[in-house]
Image 1 (tube, helix red, strand yellow):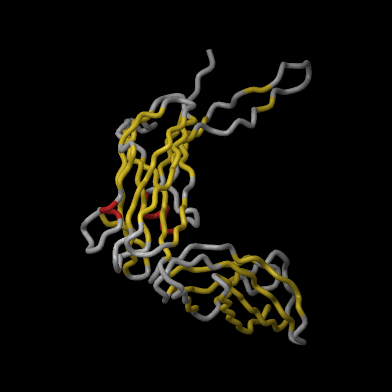
Image 2 (cartoon, one colour):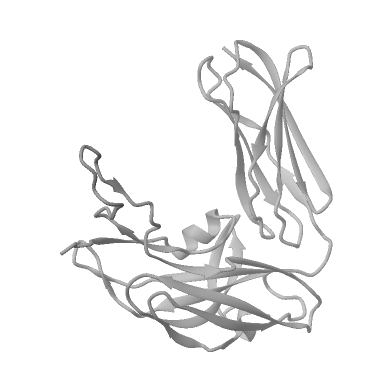
Length: 286
């Protein structure tokens, strides 16, 4: 009889939502023993099947909303159980605040004008069986001068899973909801930073960006490399990341080719909501 072992991986709520663009927690049960595919043939080794590991997922992971104070909205979030066992989940909402440039998660009602406090779930608890999905309706109301511009809807499981070390663990997943109430978008950047400026090394260009406006933004862009003559040498993509008001994140770009010794100039351009921010700096490859 084929035996399958599982390892539980849980991404902590605060760390995952602070760093991921999607803003979603994930729990994955990774199969360690390979599943063999296809009939055996003499002289041909069996190959592991490329089946995805069992997992719990929610969709969408991020919901971006616009509106005015006093309006209510109902959004659907679907939990899918691609594991061999049932899970029970209870739902709650938390406000996502920014303190010291980083996200913190605050229980509903602890902050004045808490959007999370208005959240109503239907159903507010459920069991999702193996291979099944459950859709939850989430209704929230935008308050006048809300304390934050984001909440997280938390699917908290009380189903215990035995880990390899013998400890019993539970899983929590979350969907981020952001609210844009005006067009007061603004970001500010620090000077560019460079890593790997020796010839033959991989060059990484980065800058710290702060959302100094009052609304969420999702900047993305490109880095252009110019030589000493001002001619374009190449470009590299800057991946999009979500910035809540007051949040500070480091945007990075890895240049895909190695540069020869010489003097260069880097221009990092970030774009969001029709606004462009460009930062430039000279650097040497030695």
